[in-house]
Structures are given as C-alpha cells and as structure tokens.
Figure 1: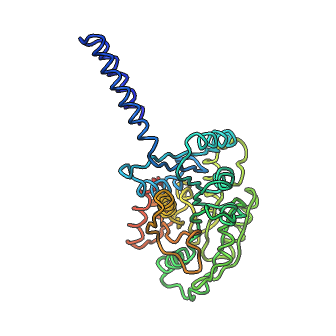
Figure 2 (figure 1 turned 135 degrees about the vertical axis):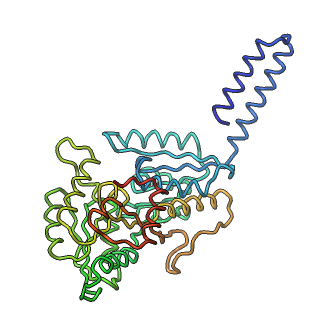
Figure 3 (figure 1 turned 90 degrees about the horizontal axis):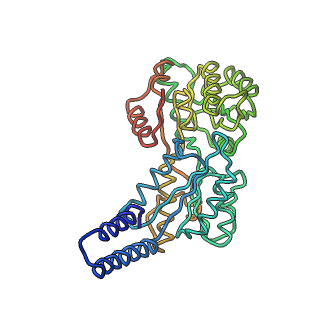
Length: 374
C-alpha cells in the first residue's frame, strides 16, 4: 500500500480520538482501521513485482525510451508493482555506492522479475543475481556479452543491434535528395564510421564490419581515445568518405574543467566543422549536441520486449513477443526496430533535404523519448 493511504489512515485515527465517541467506540474503530491498513499492506506485498535497474541516469533519452517501452507494457492496471532504479555516473556520482544500495534493496524487496539495462547494471547487478535467480537483460552489452553467454537457463534478454540496413538506405537517400545530379552509382558511395573506444562503440564497430553492404562501400572504422585522435580521424574521413556514421563518443574523457555535456558538444562541433558529407549519428544525445540526423536501435522495442519477458516469468505463460530470425534463440533476442531523429535547426543550417515521411517519423520519435534538439 502506498504512503498516502498509510498517512490517511493515521490521520483518520487522530480525528477519531478527537471525535465525540466514548473510549470503547474510539478504540474499536481505531482497531478496525489498523486491521484495514495491515490487510491492504499484506495484499500489496503479495502482488508480483518487477524491478528495473538502469546503468544510466533517467534523464538520458535512451533511458527514457526504454522506460516508455516498459511502461506501455506493465501498466498501472496490470496489478504489478513496478520500481525503477537508475545508477548515475554524472557529476562525480560514485556508482559503487549506488550499486551496493541497489543490491541491498533487491535482497529486501525480492522482486518477482529483475530487468537490468545496459552494461554496468548487467555485469554488476545482473551477473551475480543470475547465479541463483532468473534475470532479464536489455540494451547495450559489455564486450564479453557476460549475461548472454552465461550458461544459465534463467537468463533471457534482448540485445541492442545497430540497424545498418536502415542507416545505409537513409544515408544513400540523403545523397540522392541533396545531389540529384550525382553521376556516380550509389554502390560507389564510401561510408566510414568514427567512434570512441567505449562499450557501445564495440558493438557498433563489430557490426559495421560484419554488415553485408548493398548500397555503399565501407572504408573503415576509426576508434578514438581522445580529442587529438578524434580530430585526426575526422580529417582523414573528410578526404576519403562520401557518407559518415558517428558512433558513440561519450567515453572520451573531457579536458580541462568541462562537464560531459559541454565536452560532447565540442566533439560534435568538430565533426560538423570538418564534415560536409551527409552524417548520421547512432545516438539520441548526438542530436542534442548538434548532429543533424540520428538513426538508432529503438529503445522502446527493447523496453517492451524485456517487460514482456518479465511478465512471462511472473505468469509462467507465453506472451507474444516480436518474431526473430530463425537462427536466433528465443531466449536471447536482438533488436529489430529503429528510430529516425532529426535536429531541425541543423538540417536547415546544412541545407539538407528530408522526405516528408522521414520528417514526420522523426518528430514522433523525438516526442516519445523526449529529445530536445536545437
């Protein structure tokens, strides 16, 4: 039972004590209220529960998108207690302290299902938990794919996969829309990927190299540890690529006294200054930093699928989950949907033409995850 109900009952008891009843009547009514409160609390405790542990702050568009998918699946009328915990590493926050607090909460709350989102929560919370109880993972995985590769029947999840088919088609279409007189065959368009060396970029680089390209020719992946490498890579890419994908760049440590948001915008501005080619980012935060277009795996899909897996675990009944390629285990799924996002100001500033359908889809996607592109 919620705190509001508890406070209401206590307040009612206080009112009764002041009302015009004799002592016997007052204590009888008070006992009835206490019994009601205990009954409601016990009933609430018996409801199944789902705990979601995020690796990132709840203000990040990616995290908001996953929460949208979870909330549309586990609704208030589902009679399930849903609690979300977010581990923040921004502004000097200590993740170890938050992880310890979360582990203590799990032992106390004993959730019916545990969902761990992104690499930190998966390895630090989910991996130890999976030794004894079922766990569901979603989002960005660590390089070793610790949970997906764990030989445990109770581990299930959906992994993030970069939608390269959609990226390839969108960037080639951007070239065609903005240079209709382009003589070269689209198969001759050279595509490059630039990113940092963090966990999200691991999957991006690996899948870029494994993707079967149909409309473009990959010329390489540039992985950067610092600003100097970033600028050098941008210079090389500007001279050699026709279309560019900007992967994750959050893990390059800021210089001087800049916070992470200021630092990201500096890195994004370096890319904008040096690249005149059509650009697509693989993250929502890049749009806020000034990159004109983003194409990324749908966080809503990953939240929805993880929530459905949690409901399956609680109910022990099969629940419809989007079909996967037959080569994949239904225990370990991969994201199939994507989001297209646009930064209207940058699209206009760079004189880019965009299909009306793409522009509409981008506005809808931005509203869902709360992106505020300037």
